[in-house]
Length: 70
Image (cartoon, rainbow, N blue to C red):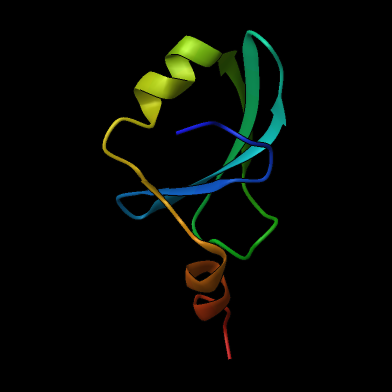
């Protein structure tokens, strides 16, 4: 799986959005909902980020759309 900016991953009850992707570093935001902009910003190495995503599920556009509040 290739990492791309703006991807949203689900791990447990937490959502992880890639904000900025560089060669060796990743900035990401952890949120409680896939469609919110509120969350905490984090910065880490790409290697540590990949370890963080172990066991997480990449959400498709359809899954993100279905998670929209009514």
